[in-house]
Length: 192
Image 1 (cartoon, rainbow, N blue to C red):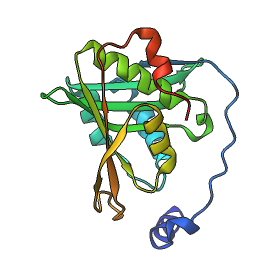
Image 2: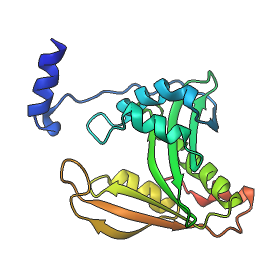
Image 3: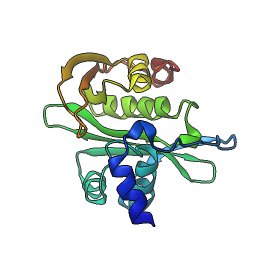
Image 4: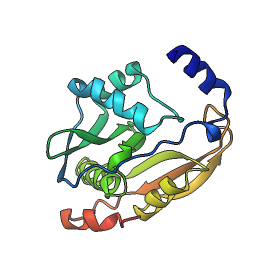
């Protein structure tokens, strides 16, 4: 039965697929922590929940990201230490950080969690002397674009047919000042 559903999902346009109803999670405290290889299965599962119809990373890709010395990976977890979001960045030799993926569990969205992870990323990169961050985002993902703009990113280029389904992407860039004080980081990302 699962095979038939998977086959049906392949041929039915995503706009007509099931509409996911999400019950918001109970109110809780959150904390940002390192995302390490021991979290592989948990982040892989959350990745598929975050990007149900999008660009999902494989177990191999996450294994790679979590084991690279030039990678910074964070998770945001609940008070019960359940992963509510994740962010992975690769830092190039030229001092530019590339956000490869960021996701927040559907039931934990609209709580400023992505902003908190991006703020932690800014702090960590600034401490390492990194001067710029880049990312790609779907042209149609206006919610993510608003978040990134509120956090200081600017669209610098449209990339034709960047995604597997043929959708264009935007390249967004953010310059890190290096002069940010720890208290400024949380104010740097305005709630989108």
